[in-house]
Image 1 (cartoon, rainbow, N blue to C red):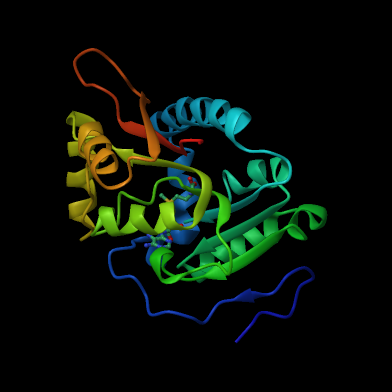
Image 2: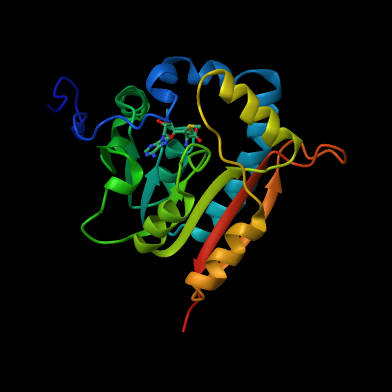
Length: 229
Ligand SMILES: C[S@@+](CC[C@H](N)C(=O)[O-])C[C@H]1O[C@@H](n2cnc3c(N)ncnc32)[C@H](O)[C@@H]1O
């Protein structure tokens, strides 16, 4: 079934079965309330500052960006202004409705909305950039997920994931409370995997958010770029 009661591109809301480890099937409506909580808001600003620097250097006006886990469009609203086309994918139908309804019509025309689990979707041709912000937290098999990202990206993959420092542990325990399993990451596990399996890609990992001396940071921002030549 597609949604036809609004202008702009249609959203295919009825595709794959629900991904059981994705809490946003239950909490999509309250996601933005969480983002506006004081600590989360500060962390989010720090993350966004770093990501804007990355977008400035990586995204070109002629690009197609595949955004996996677009959520309510916190970053979609930004990248749609920088790129020629955005494929906004999420496996929560509610998230897709929210992001679609929020985009101004001119921006919405540049977006294709896809409801799917990330790795179940194969675009007809690779995108220039694949990005997923706050998604590796929930995936069971991160190597499989990143393989899919690299296969579908011509130039770069931009992502975030939780650290396995104290903040990552807090996040993990809070999520366990809700019955969700959160993956936490060492930068070196991703760097070593990439080096071994994809030596033609370069990896840059930076720490952002609540990065006090004792606690360490909360999140990794990863930028994978294809080496030229
Ligand atoms: C933490 S939210 C982040 C949303 C948005 N990227 C942002 O930064 O505000 C994670 C989003 O990823 C989606 N998601 C989680 N796992 C997914 C998967 N395997 N495939 C597709 N979407 C997924 C959730 O539905 C949710 O909208």
